[in-house]
Image 1 (cartoon, one colour):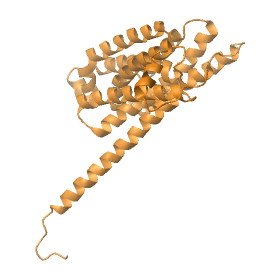
Image 2 (tube, rainbow, N blue to C red):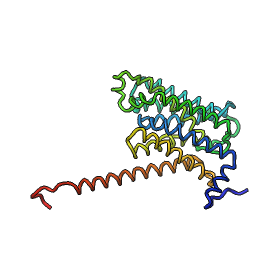
Image 3 (tube, helix red, strand yellow):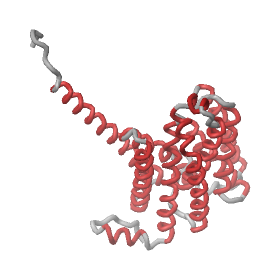
Length: 302
């Protein structure tokens, strides 16, 4: 059987994709991951903790490698390592400012050690490590109904926890000093958010791969925050962009023999560039309107 070919009849094309159970599971899992990664990623970008998100995405790889070596569930490896790494980063920070140089050093230390552990687990595995490319760059093949259920349960837990701490977390993210002075538990919120970030990263890594999960976490949020400064609208736009690029990536990966993570990242990056272009055009128009309405002083040079 040859590879599927995209036609001009989009309805038939979608019916063909949805006739395969693994594609149905992939679209369901992609929708869950997009929503969770978008919501958590929005706070990550706002708090300037993208390096922490990158570290946790890299940590997903040794978690999957250990799961393969020990013979237990990949999902357990992803979630176990990412959440453990998030707790380690929180412990090493010891109340320092999010995004500061001290946090970056602590985060980089955890990243380097656990990445080295991942290579050790690969070396200890005597057979051929199954699907190393999919672990790193993502794959929609082989997603089972059980995995979708695990992703859904984890996603509900993460979103419920994020909703519970959302308002004080937003306050602490925008102005941590004032929030602390008002009695907001800034440090506890920071630890809780890192754990949620680890869980969201572990969830998204199972779709986009360990190396490219960072793109799904940061690009939709960065794009939305370029387009609008209103928190509610920006968060909603982040989730919508993540959902769109994930499903578009799944469609492209179904018809092309390239990793899913490549398509998701490329589509998200294209939207990021378009958002910056649109903002630049809007600013240029505002500048021209301001200059055209500027009063001319009497006696000034032409």
